[in-house]
Each structure stands twice: as structure tokens, then as C-alpha cells.
Amino acid sequence: MKECEVLAAADAVFDAERALRLAADTVDELGDLAASSLRVLDDAATDAFYAHQEERRDFHLESAGDQLARLRNRSGLMNELGEDLTRHLTAAGSAIERAGDELARGIDGDDRDTDVRALRTQIDILTEVVTLARTVAEQITRHAQHAAESAAATDALMLLDSRVHHAGQEVTRADEGVSMMRSVIESAQSRARTSAALAGSLSYAATHTSRQSWSSGPQQTHQPDKPADPGIAI
Image (cartoon, rainbow, N blue to C red):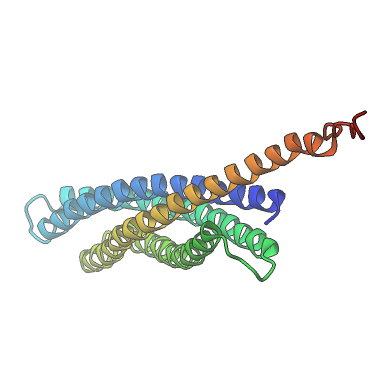
């Protein structure tokens, strides 16, 4: 492979690794929000239960409404983070595709370099993992949107029960999606680190070889003169 193709592939792999680090940070934020939303739902369910009793009904109805408002706010934030997550994963996917294209461009049909073959294998697997992660991210966003819609305010007791129930289902599914995403992102990051190490090795070898060739060039073109033929001694 040519040096420029190796370096371009390495840069693309490093870009993918950075994008996946941002994705992992976003997943952590999503996890915190999902856990907080579940706690809010517990409070809303408690208020909805006590609102069916005569004693302090208005108080519990108002409190349940406040909890639903808090849930709508958190669901909106989860939706925004889900979009951020999808954007980071899209960036990672584009970088991985770029790396694969550069490696494919540099292969001349006689690829005996073990590191190149290993890097191509890692990139192929990483592509599948990131594709899966994007699907899970879309599901998390969709559940967050549905949770926000289900948490609309109401003063009707039966409708309140229904909305708390449906919002709970959606937030629980979003939380399960975040848990799955953690596993997928960890796998992607592991593959990305391995790919980055291989890309770094290839990049170093390519530049080192190039510098050696450049420095040894002049020595090869200016050979010392051979000693003159002494001829026949007299």
C-alpha cells in the first residue's frame, strides 16, 4: 500500500474512534436521564393511586400533573440526546467507510501484509456493530418521543392512570434500549481501539519506510569511485 493511502485510512480510523467516544459519553447521559425518569414515574404512579381516594384528591391530582410535566421535560431531553447519539454514530460510520475505501484502494490483489488484513477484518466487523448501534439509538429516540406524548397533562383520573401506564412502558423500553446500547458501544469501542492500534502501526511503518527510502536514495546514487587499475607492475 502507498503511504498516502495508509495515512488516510489511519486518520479515518482515528476519527471513528473519537466519534465513538462521544457516543459513549452520550449513552451515559441517556442512562442517567432514563433512571431519573423512572423515579419520576414512580412518584406519578403513587400520586395517581392516592388521587382515587377522597382525602386530598386535588392535592394528588396536581402533584401527578407536576410529575408528568417533569417526565415530559426529561423525555424531551432524552429525545435530543438520542439525536446526538445518532449523529455521533453516523459520523463514526462515515469514518469507518472512508477507512475501508482507502484500504480497498491500496490493495493490488497481492495483500500479504498481516496488519492490513487484520485491520480490514476489524473494520468489517466494526461496520456491522455501528449499524446495529444506530438502529438501537433510533429505537431509544422513538420511545422517548412516545413517553413525552403519553405524559400529556390531564385532570381525568382514568385518563391519568392510562397515561402514567403508557409513559411507564415507553420509558422502560427506552431504559432497556440504553442498557443494550451500552453493550453495543463497548463492543464498538473495543473494535475501534484495536483498529486504531493496527492503523497506528501501519502508519508508522509507512512513514518510517518512506523516510528510510528518501535518506538512502542519495547514498545509492553516489557510489564511491572504484580504485584505478594499477596495471602491470614494472
